[in-house]
Length: 102
Image 1 (tube, rainbow, N blue to C red):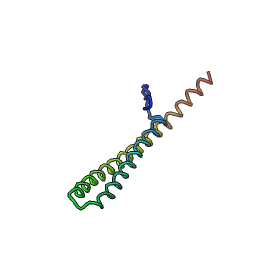
Image 2: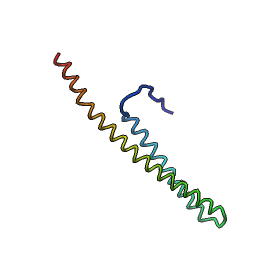
Image 3: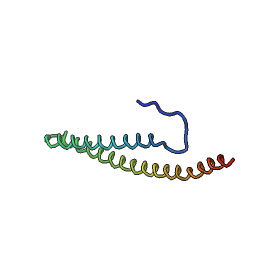
Image 4: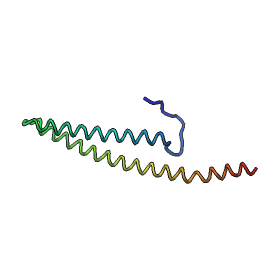
């Protein structure tokens, strides 16, 4: 596992953003793969196990909906982070310019 940075900052780093987005995507892919596996094996069953797999599939559908909401919320966070960095950039440039003027 990667060593996590201990320093606090005002906005999410690009590396952090990519790492989180990748992890969220992997969860969605894994849930989808599990649903496909359940659908395949459910077709082979005539017993109560087929009904149980259907219940499990419904849970996965709910989990996928939650993950999609999480991805939407994360995208909003990313956009806010970019906006904050963009807003901070002119202030940094002004400080650098005033240092050069001195």
